[in-house]
Length: 302
Image (cartoon, one colour):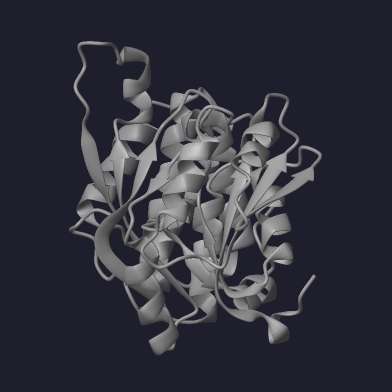
C-alpha cells in the first residue's frame, strides 16, 4: 500500500460494487473512455453474491484492478479503494452510473493548477426514486440537473452551503488522497448520505472546485439506498450529532436540518423524534417566515 507522500501523479478511480453484474461493465467503460485517462480503476467487489467479480475479470483490461472483500457496505468498499490507490488524487464512480467522456479532462487541470482539496461537477439524474415504480414502456425519460442552478455559493469555501444542503454527489467527486485520509475516510456507520458527510469534512479542510457542466449520468435503481426513508432519517440524525458544533455555529442551518428531521419523522409516525427536533429548530433562533410556518403547521399535526 503506497503512502500518500510517494503517491504518483494522476488519478485513481474507485468503484464500489455489490451485485452489479448488469451495470458494472458500463460504469467501468465510461471511465476507460475518458479523454484524460485515469491511472488505474479499482473495482471493489463488496461481497457480491452474483457474477459482478466475473464480469470485471472478463474485461481483462490492464488499468482495471479487482479488489474483493467480505460485504462491509459502500463506505467500507470506498475506503478499501482509497487505501489501495496509488495516485495523488482519487475519483469515485458508482457501479450503476456513467461518466461522460470529458469529466476528468475538465476537472483535473483545474485541481492540479489551484489550491483545492477536491472538485465536483454537475450530474444529470434520470427520473427520481418516486418515479421508479411507475416506469413502463410508455414512460419517457426525464432529466434533472444537480446541483440546483439557483444554489450559491457552490465553489470555494462552501461549508455554509453544505450545512444547508448537499450539492456534491460522490460519483462527481475527485479529492486529494492525503486529505481523504486526514479527514478520516468515509463513515462506515452511515447507511445513507455518506456523500454529504464526506463533503462537510472535506470543506473543513480547504477549498473545493466546481465544474458547472453535467459530466455524470445517474440512474436510480431498485436497490438504491436513496430510496430507503428510514435509513435516510437515521443518517440525518447521525450527521447532526457528528457535526453538532458546526450546525450550532450556524443557527439557520441548524433550524433547517432539525426541521428536515422533524418533518420526516412525523411522516413516519415517530412523534417523539419529531417533537425533539421541532424543539431544536425553535431554539436555534429566529427562523425565516417560511420556516416558521413549516414548523407551526407540522407541529400542530403531531
